[in-house]
Length: 252
Image (cartoon, rainbow, N blue to C red):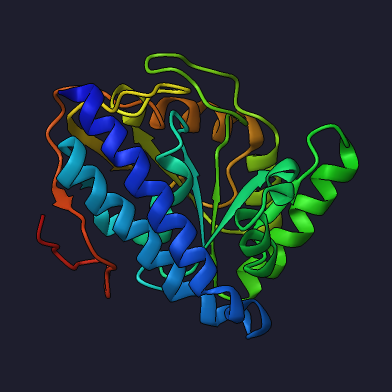
C-alpha cells in the first residue's frame, strides 16, 4: 500500500509541478513579486498531496519565532527534498541558498533565477562566499527571508555534519539573528527513496541566536539547535495554507 500511495504521489507531484510551471511561464516576464504567490501555491499543493496520498502531515513547532514579514535569516537542518520547498509555504517571501547546478534544470531553474534564489558555486571557494554575502544583503534589503542549510548538504536522520562558514558570514554581513530550525523530514521522505512513509514531519523552529555572536559560539549553538530532540513538548501548529501572521493557527 505504501508503494502504491508513493507512486500516486509521484505522478501527482510531477503533474502538478509541470502544469503549474507551464501556466506560470508568462510571469517570467513580470516583476519578481508576481511569482511569490504561485510558488507558495505550489508548495501548499505538494503538502496537500503528501497528506492526502501518503498520510504525511506537517507540524510546525515554535511558529512564533518566524517572521510575519521583513528580513530574517533561517538556518535549517536539511534531510529531504521536502525541505527545499516547504519554506515557500511558511515564509512571506523566502529566498533559498542553493547549489548553482539547480539553475540548469528546466522550469525549476528558470523560476529560481527569476525569483533571485541565491545560487552558489560550491567549487568557487572564497568568491562563492563573497557572492553569497552580496546576494544575501540584497535579499535582506528587499525585506526577504534567507533560508540556508548550514551543514551545506543533506544529512540522514540522526547524522550530524559540520556547520559550514557561510552561515557565520551571513550573520555578520546582515546583522540579523539566526533562527535555527530542526526537522525529521528524512524519516518520511528519504534521500533518493521512492517510498514516502506516513506520519508527521516536524519542523521545530528554535529561539533566535542573537546577532553579534562570535563565530565559534554561533557555530556551537547552531549545531545543537538544529538537531530535533524527540519527546520534547513544544507548541505545534499544523500547516496547510499560507500564514498571514506569526501567530496564525492553521487548520490541518
